[in-house]
Image (tube, rainbow, N blue to C red; front, side, top):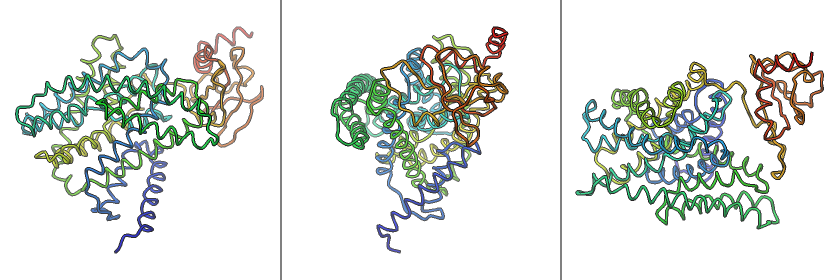
Length: 497
């Protein structure tokens, strides 16, 4: 059958539609979206019902790099600087030392247990050494996986900044394999250069994006998203051309923009959130198409052994050692150890040996894909349960479903706080007038099931209600405490009597 443009567009649109609908069911089943997208890609491939022929690692690599750039930029946009400032040290330690330790431990396992040659084993460890930003952002920002304190920003900072080390390790090991006489120590100056140039250009380009959006005064509002899209690619391309790491640059640029006063900021954040989801679908579908399921059968046993070692030994040991200088409770360290999601980044890195023609690259790619599937299935489905078991699940779920339609003036101290009331909250069954909210805080919108309305004083709070509150930055924590803390609720009731 001749593949026409019309058939190609029909196939692409159907793949997107299937992925979106499957993601809806994945939320109900507690399965991460990346696993659904990968499976859809595999089913659409040459060995699946779709029968789409795709065997181009180079093209998949390009798609993955572009998609990951937009995902990281969106992740930076949605991250507050005040959240990551306290955990900057641990985050950097995890994204550097943690990556190296993970690669070394898995490499040693591959030599001793799987019988790999030392350099091939180290290459396998380097490829799967980093956690995946796309997977981490999508899972930790759902209502199912709300974490207490600084855990979410710590894990997201690690996932957003550990790709450079993994990329450098992968490229370094490939160079040692293909170029005799090359030493791994040669990548140390390259790493310093990549991080320094990436960090500086990321900050500079972030400021440039803010300046251009605020000062250009474009006649059409629709051009602002186009401008920001262009600047993301410019940031990555310029940084990579000048010897820096483009991934860390776009993440920092997004962080700078997300923490600055920008016109049309809320609409731009929503736009890039949609682009990030589009890029996730494109990236995981392309990587799924690249896989031949029949080749995975031979890697089931070694892949399962490697995945279990990574989950239960390499990742926990690397995290515990990396976090030794910081006094974190052991339950928090265990949770960080468990949230070691592997996703698109390891699969993208696994295309590097394929493109370079490294001996045994096909085996490495299939092993990495199997490890990612296991990680997505085990980690992605268990994080909420593990967080609750460790006592680290956040009691109040914050969402952005109601606040999307409200544009706050960034020059004012006002803040929109959107909370989902859990069943165990002490305010369940109380009227709005009896909540004891601090002066200057108003509930401006409420959602009960599918109904949205402005509540009155006699409106009764029920479990799973969503409240949109207008408050100030300094009162936000007090509001959360009043709505959740049983002691505060009892104290306020006693004061009223």
